[in-house]
Length: 116
Image 1 (cartoon, rainbow, N blue to C red):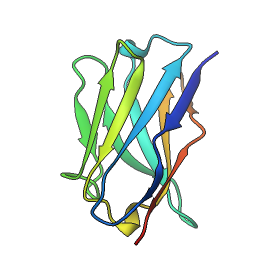
Image 2: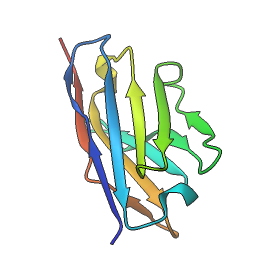
Image 3: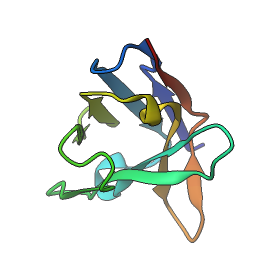
């Protein structure tokens, strides 16, 4: 059974940092690109970052470019999102997903709140 579990969210002040993890099981992690999305209250889910399978090419939404870094550890079947210089508008539930077929498989999400 495919599972994606996000963790690492929390409450942080503006300018602070968090590192999110997406731990996976049930598929050959190293063979698939992985994605981060987020959903702010009252808004649609939006793309944040993506990382391909080997060699791990990355791409980011313009709103997070230069502040967020996506990475992966294929030995641990885990993807990460290092978030620096956080802003209140980064608040939301952060999800990871993977496309094993036509439709994505999602994790349950982890809440990130940026507030003073």
